[in-house]
Image 1 (cartoon, one colour):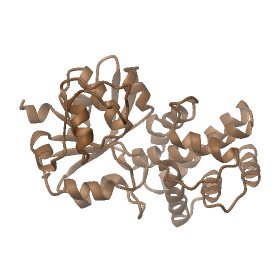
Image 2 (image 1 turned 180 degrees about the vertical axis):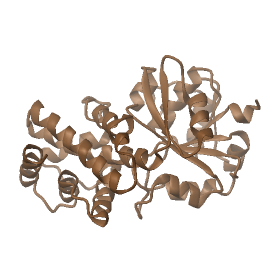
Image 3 (image 1 turned 135 degrees about the vertical axis):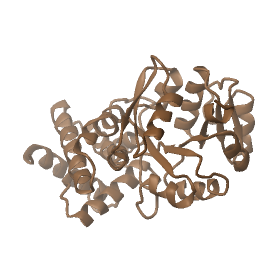
Length: 329
């Protein structure tokens, strides 16, 4: 095959994109990052990431460019790993260079701002790329950076997408890729699991105990599946890697590698006011709006959204969540 067909292109230089690039590079896979930052391009080209991830060393087979046209010429398979608030803008720029021969999967666990669109829809709207998919699951950047064994789900309506995803991103003994056709379910599950991670962080911060914590996670999976079913997704997807698996790992790592959504839940429990940006928070609001539009009752998700909007005090929110997980079945 051509070098273009064997190179993984990654859009974005956040923790997930950089860690995935390093993992694939260590496995001998050629990787090309597209970043608009000349500083990131220079650091990656020099094998270092001094400011963003100083502990991560980039193998020589990982390169970076700031020219989107050069990026599109050198890669065919693209992983989009940018923030949901900027994905439409980045895809619009990418659309100037790519064509129907490219394949794109995204690793964005949220809906595209500000209109709550699924990211695969945004890619299709802003670019000429015809074959899209999503990768999701319990793979934290710290695991990828350290080379610890992990798994991801690749979902797409196109078999070629999932086949290429497994071929190019799969790493024997380290990264295992599972396939699914339920792209709607995988995208919703990935986004919603971040929203419910906030609730688990809140519960841990309030010290509710391991029993109620477990029931909360069970109720969260059930709510995700209920919304997914109403949206036309497969229920089983929400109890797999993209949904329950994602939620478990995001709410289990409780050190410096904890997910931003989990840390947000802890901060809320400690009385801090939420004023910043967070993918889980955006997913909570979008999921709540979707649930209302579809007529689906999701008490935990509604409570999370109302906390983030400042409509509920922490004490009242905690009481509502406890009532939900102890009374609803």
